[in-house]
Length: 447
Image (cartoon, rainbow, N blue to C red; front, side, top):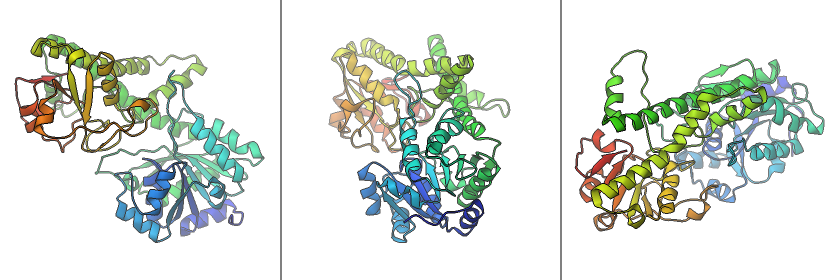
């Protein structure tokens, strides 16, 4: 049954005493770490997700997110501080609700807000006075004060008077062992002073550092700015790579030397394309929102074009290398892509350029396989549903020698690159992984 109606003073007291019940909607790469972090901080947490597989995994104490060890998840579950359900009618039991659902783009690079909208409708169905609702999903400035507030207020309750609304952008970095959810500074904002105080109090009880800003739109812009900064700088070095390549200059050597400057320079590195949920997607939320103000976002759009072109550039280099060095067309070649994940040492394949590389190779008539020690088979994806269930290739000398070319897309640490250099007939390296390990061979080409 829902708890008694709460005033903001009572909710604040419950946050301070850890008596507030927390609901996390969306138990993926953002939601599950947040849920466990809140539980370990002393809150009773209920996770909500539409995927029955996640609910089952949590019930048996098995984590499906690398950042959350199974033993820690199991301990919080057994202690009664964390449970999961697909019954969204139980949202009314929660005093604080954090929305951590996906915000992808459509094929036309417009925001796909259906998951946020549906979640807000689910919350609105049981919304009661005294609840705090916080959006964490990355979005365009104005979402919290617009779409989210409008949907929640449709039942008659008002933000700032009856319930409280806030935004706090997620800052998860899969595979980064230096920072955990609790140690990453948290930007927070509320819809009004009371909501601001409640959002600050809640996250201040969960993470070490809270960074309040003046409005939810500002907090939304903070997240976009962080990822636009990275997208534009990665696009710059990707473009420089192509130019320097034509000049016979090694972009990796250039970046290493430039990094010796102790001021005024920050290294970014080229690659086969952008991956992950944030960098390939988030900048276009601002591009979309800027249209309403009739303002162009030239840097963002140009960066997007450059980064989106990288997989085709890499496949063109691969085809050229096969032709010149092996005398074989890509259409008659077997290619092994090393690394399906979008970044090294994680199993996360969201927006991975490796999937695009496989698609492009097969579009040109080639045969593409992949090897990834973190991804035993391709899981369901929105864009590449036909690849679902395709298994990783075996790691053995005979099988790898059978490929005409090897394409390094992700530089996982737990790959034997010395053996690969010996076994591979032709290797196209987009990550400079061999040079970084001091491995040289005539069969290795940078791209």
